[in-house]
Length: 178
Image 1 (cartoon, rainbow, N blue to C red):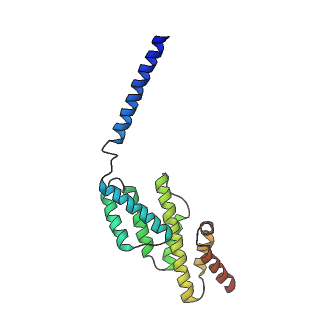
Image 2 (image 1 turned 90 degrees about the vertical axis):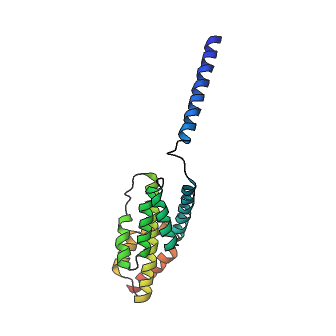
Image 3 (image 1 turned 180 degrees about the horizontal axis):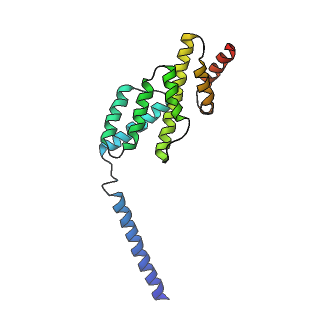
């Protein structure tokens, strides 16, 4: 019995030491270590996500982050997302932004991080569309049918967002037109 317990303790300590060494080897592997520039890119990415959620985009900063991210092998999955943000922020007409936002009605991404980025860019696109549509309403005095259909299609997203006041304004304008 004593021999069995000693054998068990010896084997379990060897297994534990081997597992600990394996964890250290995994974490210290050069494929998983981040350079100082990677840490800076990660901080910039977090800032960009916060800006996008608040609807603020600085084109110069965005271009700089895209250039930095393209050079990093660890952040390649963020490059298409950043390019999409750049495209959306440069759209100015209601029809162009509405057409562009149509691709965010349904999820296409499979992996969690890409799905989260797709959701954020979709939200940004819809919020930007509301801004452009509201400017168009102020300029023309009416809401186009295309804008009305867009809002109806994306209603489930607008109800969850902070833009509910703008949505109420749009519905008031549309009901006043009828």
